[in-house]
Length: 239
Length: 213
Image (cartoon, rainbow over all chains, first blue to last red; front, top):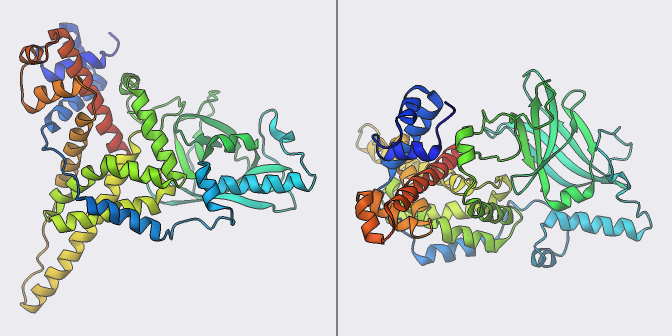
């Protein structure tokens, strides 16, 4: 039979004599279902803890006071009206990007967006280094090990993601660069690291605007499947 | 539980496919947590307040169990949320990421507090020429405590009647038939609530475990 319904496995975890015989037999022989059953049993065993104890109210006040007193981790963002950005619920760096764009439009170079159509592709690095409007430190997913950096660069009328990665490992396959939405669900491929660990990818500004801010590098086997392999070797959020 | 829930062909790294399918219900709650995390990352102070209100009891209770000192537990709780704010850029929003991340920070702060105690104890020991008095605390015991607290919070956050049913079943060890009588629901409904509740708790716990790695 195919795998047992989690619902029935949960029933078995609660009462080993519960449920149809074929489900019990399957759970006894299928490693996957047996593991899930064991996990459910483990959760059941962990139930019974005493109620959580809230900290005294003064701790909350102290946390907020300390947070408001100073924020050493605040990235050195270009000076933008802080309050304005916060009130609109717009991240600081995004407000900076918007400001840069407004400036661009102001000087009559409003050709922004022409590169937004079609599939994004790696572009030859322009001579002009452009303005870095957001940056991310890339790290491994299972540790804080450094994997290089990525930056979002505004240059003339293009917007590019520059990736300069290190130590991506030598697993077989190509390295593909993705932007993952901060909602943790949506993602879009922006291209391949064609040569070495560095690459530059033109992307439509709207993507970043919408929240596709997490740069992710995956290892993709040559299997013709265009979706993310699920094997990420580096990740960082543009901020 | 799929912690990095994006379209992926292989779930090897991210959890068991069987569990992935089972977690489609109560997605709404997950979305709310994800949105909250995203607001924190974006620098929204009110998000920190909401996160504090929802998880400070979890962090505080963990610190209290691990350190067995109310004053130290308060200190650690405060340090955890301040550190969470300052390192918010490192958080990848996903449903289980917030509690896992907070507990991860708490683990470090508890370790720091213990190290400080051990140094003090060593100093005393050096004076009276005794071996260092480390409080042989075991990380796996701490982790088990954390997991029990995560389960407790997950049950607390279930909507009624499932919450009440889970308490009667798991905390008071009542039979399904007794529960059906107490809450006035059909036996089949009660069974279904307990099963679904157990699956939900499993997802929460797996999420926290995965994110803690």
